[in-house]
Image (cartoon, rainbow, N blue to C red; front, side, top):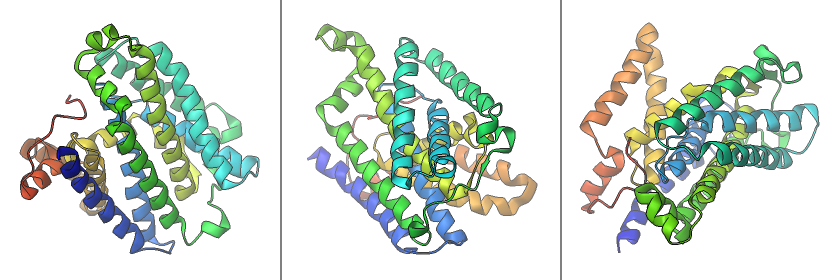
Length: 314
């Protein structure tokens, strides 16, 4: 019964996203771009939250998204490969790199892993600035979606995001997902029943990075340019803000939080030099007044009892 009720919240949020994308089925103007930004921010926030299932804050998400963006950009602009292959290559590259990074770093936990993931993202950003082939400091220009998707790119992005969210949700509800939460609660007990905790955590990071790689590729082709600064640690900070505002207990949290804050950011731009103050204040107020995020408010409105946290609180 609890899962069914939780699913209600998920499907309401997913339907809202679908309606948002469907209302701009075609187009290349600002409104269409806004739909794309909302959808991609949702995807990256969901990717960030997935690693929270094992109790870790993964600031490396920005690095893996950057890898996806640059790999996809090279595939389409330098190598002339089809867009679908570019997306697959982006996801695969981010995943393979995460397997290596995760195997080395996930022997640590808590603030140690967080700091390592932060450093990893910044090192990658500096590496991008030193490679002329991908534009170094100037970035990679002319990264466009295929002509066939020109007017339908918002719809394509929303479709990919919806599919990715459903897959992440299904994994979270599976036995594997339950193991991830058990690791967060007490990894020593999980180890005693014969489960390799370290490799399970590495697989969790790999799944998250697969999604982040797709998000980075979609973002690159939406902006038509890839800049190293687009994938600094600030991207991870923003995704964490989306989760805090939306709520950590359900995958609907990233959907709601990213939607609200991305739209709010457009309003904040009208405040000129006070933009960041306004945006930051909105986040602080939301976190203080809504400890369970927007998901918590929806649960109370629907009369649903809170469920155990599916993501760690930090």
